[in-house]
Length: 118
Image 1: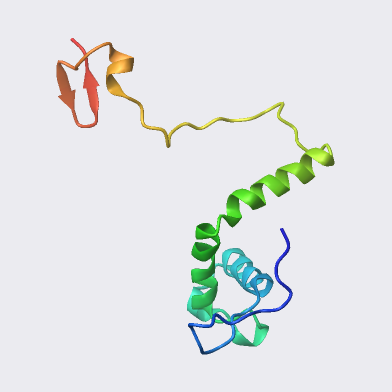
Image 2: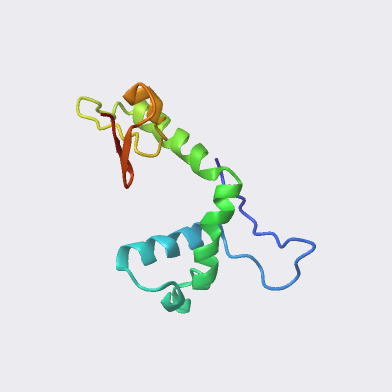
């Protein structure tokens, strides 16, 4: 995954030229590392406006860049034999569990989010 070397301006969106992704990414890393607010990102460092740095990850998500980046990083780590899965954690908290599967039927009594079978 190579970034374009020339920053192009969209035809339908005249105005300022788009800041290069590499510089914007460095600005994002600076904000995350230092904890400064997006609007306080120093312009003299050349990372572009803080609002651009704040919006760009959403554009990269829509373009599918994050899964591709993950694949590339995993391939490089595997190639360097740098992955160690002897200790790993699996988190399934983002997967919805169907309640009837675990209790064998509808609950008889419910309290908040938890249900108890009698």
